[in-house]
Length: 348
Ligand SMILES: [Zn+2]
Image 1 (cartoon, rainbow, N blue to C red):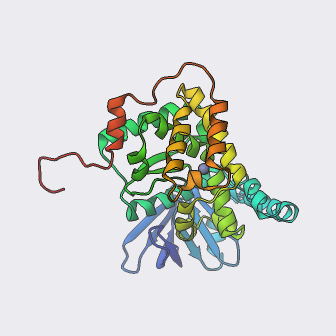
Image 2: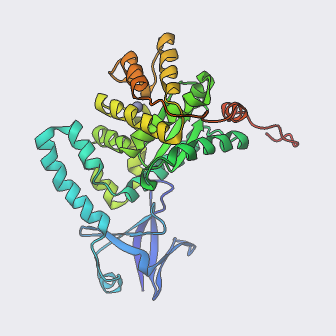
Image 3: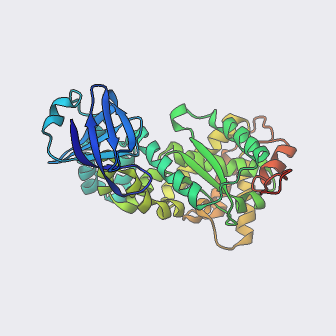
């Protein structure tokens, strides 16, 4: 049985005219020239929206979707309907968001709503965002530097429950002294920040601060504030590429409330303590940048003055034993993460 439909391949936001072949074990998606574009197993297919048309997704290929006209034979063929968990939570989030909006206004509501979005949905959004960054920005990949970064990340992440750990920490080749956390548990450190750091403890402090934002789902809350609660519906129906496109620039700007920043500083100190790393590195980094006095990066930009944040970190730092976040050679390798190692062949 063949049905004409529209297919979104997840690589572009364009719909492709396709023919969908319903088979016993699943469906084949074929283009006008008869080329097979995708095969979806029946058990992984689900219908995501109750509209006149039918939109289907396949759990193995979260970025793709199929739009088909009236149900007809398809209704018989589709696996027994079970309202997907994401959709239920979406509905609850939708209802809750209305109440929350009325009660608290958007800034507070966004934080509450962010916690209602399934982690899996946020992760998928993060993957789409990351793919865009991989295309547009230089992610630094010197293998020795990446090793050092991974070691530092793992040491800090061990202090967090698995669900709250970053999925990916990467360095972008960009001279700004900055670090950002994106929805979907991704943290980007800018190479300008590594250049400024005088010890691994300083980098560890900034990384712990961004990890705290991730753990508390601040990036998603900021995204919801920025692009509106309506975007939640898009998030739930699985059409993430369009959403990511509007998010990209915003996410990199990183807008957190004063309360978010204080909470992130406090949690960062805990993460560092649990990892046996001195939080004084973070305080020292704040102090140095304060003296520089030029344009301040995200993690310094919001209202609590640097001096008071610094004092708070120092006051929270316990007297227990600590060890350097990385040994000196590892720190040097991390600082050189954007330098490509020399190769024998001359092709870059
Ligand atoms: Zn921050």
